[in-house]
Length: 136
Image (cartoon, rainbow, N blue to C red; front, side, top):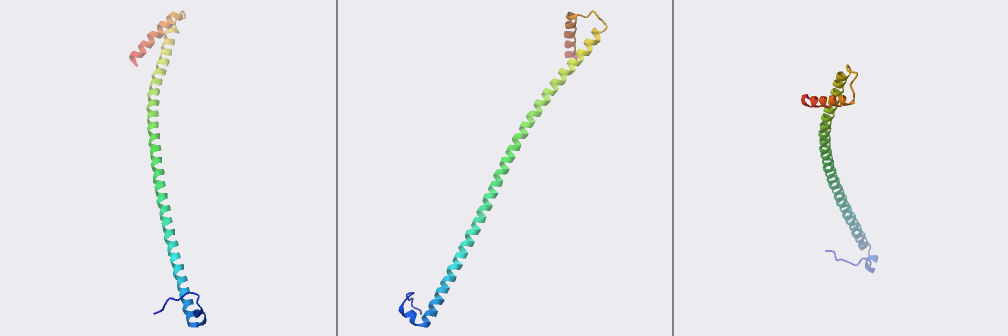
């Protein structure tokens, strides 16, 4: 059984066999510490990679959630705008139809009568608007 000896003793310098044994021990310690450091660096590197992947996955999940929420809000806004546009379009179409019909009927009624003045024109227009409201 080998006894542990001090690293730098006077006896180890004089005996060549002890010097070889000391060199082998130092070399074994160096290999052990180098391999231990390599394993530590490897474990740390793998942990960093896994942490980075987890972060990127979580970030993409959060981005997707925000994108879906934004698109859903935009879809709701678009639907409400479409409803409003349809409503105003129908009102505008009815108003335009009423105006065009008023003008056509008014021109057809007043054109043969050159004596059509402002009062009769107002009467005809209210009459036409009433008729258009009833039939349209």
